[in-house]
Length: 401
Image 1 (cartoon, helix red, strand yellow):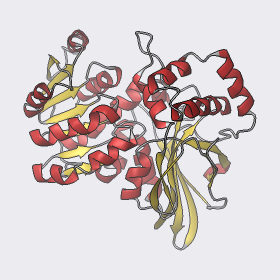
Image 2 (cartoon, helix red, strand yellow; image 1 turned 30 degrees about the vertical axis):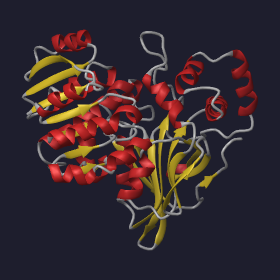
Image 3 (cartoon, helix red, strand yellow; image 1 turned 90 degrees about the vertical axis):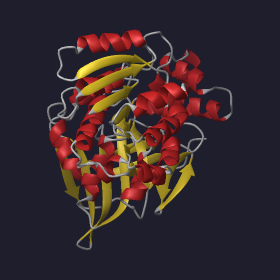
């Protein structure tokens, strides 16, 4: 099979390529990137690998070039972000080309638009898997494991570490400018974001505190952020209560983010300028955030990365937590690998047909979660699923004003 890795010379794309070259069924892999020199260096690094590797200069904003590259491929790994700019157009091109598709989309707005391409994908016989990274991706599969222990699902929360422990993504790129992850972050803490309330998808301001009591005596407060998980888990798990993606974040950081959110919403900042302030906080903003932080609740003993579901089993309330076995998951220490490796493991299930089902899907709808976590064990040993009584319900607070 011929694999096209779009953005394959970037940090996450390169991590996916390094993992994908070892997969059975990969005969040729094309590293396509607008930075041809970087693509060539990656190909040279991996020249001893079994598949034939080639470098290709490609800018996804060139429709003719993109179409030609996709027509020549059987599968495409799309790691070009931000997805709110490029995701729907690249998926539409893959469907036209009849090329199976996987990406790392971590923006909820384009996820909604790409799910609307499900009918077109079915007619073309294309399987598309959205958000096959860490969060979304691993987080969705945690949620599937947790919900699988319940007869009826009420609430579902996924959570991702920002600065607890030290597992945050780099905020600046090699050129000193704000990185794509930081710009994405600003997009998803401003405006309104997708959550589920009383079983229905709604939009609410981000950075709303949610207090959780989890099995094992763990508990604390996370803060809502815009992400695809509530959009897709609403469709796949049909929670009758609430669903949201949360940041596990220190009080000082959430207070600083709230200041940026206010200025973003008032038009005083754009995503790039806000990301620059986050990377290099001015003293005045930092002091103001410190004053606000004292009034906020912190993460307490919440795990850094998890999914939790509440509901009924055999008529009794139950809470289920799925999380990495490691207290400080090693995989999260390198965000490129934490995101790129799951993408390659998702590709493995498309290559052998396990997850190949025409249409546009989130990971939890087509990826075999148990097999995925077995395949992930060399990089992140073990998954723990814990159960406990669903005693204290989750509480969602108001957005900061």
